[in-house]
Length: 303
Ligand SMILES: Nc1ncnc2c1ncn2[C@@H]1O[C@H](COP(=O)(O)OP(=O)(O)OP(=O)(O)O)[C@@H](O)[C@H]1O
Ligand SMILES: O=P(O)(O)OC[C@H]1O[C@H](OP(=O)(O)OP(=O)(O)O)[C@H](O)[C@@H]1O
Image (cartoon, rainbow, N blue to C red; front, side, top):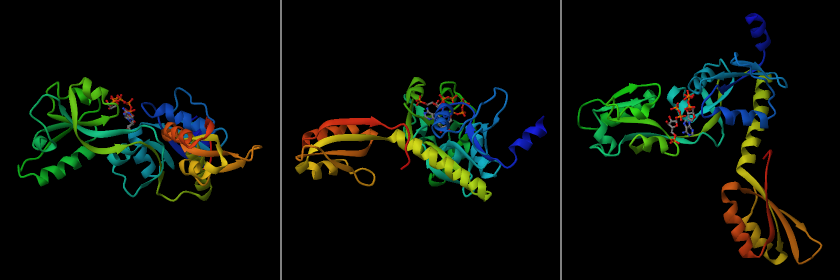
């Protein structure tokens, strides 16, 4: 059975996806948007893609950089924090930022306590799941400090936020997004070690040409899905004499589409706008005299 399975994997491009956790659902949405068709069986962490010569390998997010770096899989999705922690410099390339899984790796200490800055932590005990990054950060700090002592970095696999309250640590290094978990544990952040988001990474080991072409095709499809989430299409009518002003507000990615209307005094404009800026853009268009401003969400695109 196993032999049959590895035979069916032979020659396929291997794509690593986080098997659970924060990034999992978003990855499934990306795969659906890129029309990567598969059925994941409960018991298997490898599954064949029906419509491409590819297989998905579901792995812990933390292991993906190493698997990609060593060329066991050709490409994968994980967090930038995981790539940095795995220390795979030169072995993988980041090919696409995916705009989700955004968070910060921060040094946190009890809100009420004697530790106010990272220098106060030098020589004390820090607990973290990111022992490489925390070790490097405090190693540099120890060297700069004149205390002549080393900060003790201790690894724990989860529930890091509880460490200070339990008396296990003077500070922690952990991920923060909304800050809710941190505040609930009576902690606050005193330094950011890195910012992170989910990324598509590729092995730097040379792939076979037919893998290269497929990886590039899937990457381009995923880039389209990511861009579709970032942009909207903004359509509006504007007096012809104001079109120059209006298109300064909506320059589009390459150039806006300007079309004549039956009324010679007016034109219609269609342009891609960043979703995050669209409310402001609509206000400015209205001030310029545009009307019938319509914002349309994109399901998919290639840009
Ligand atoms: N609160 C958060 N907000 C946004 N992104 C996050 C958050 N926490 C973690 N991430 C991102 O998701 C990645 C995976 O985190 P997650 O906590 O799901 O790890 P996991 O250990 O694989 O899953 P689990 O905790 O279920 O075992 C992190 O490396 C980080 O890039
Ligand atoms: O700032 P917040 O929005 O509160 O998010 C931060 C929390 O998210 C992550 O854990 P997650 O909830 O993914 O679970 P985990 O601890 O099991 O990894 C991280 O380790 C923090 O605990």
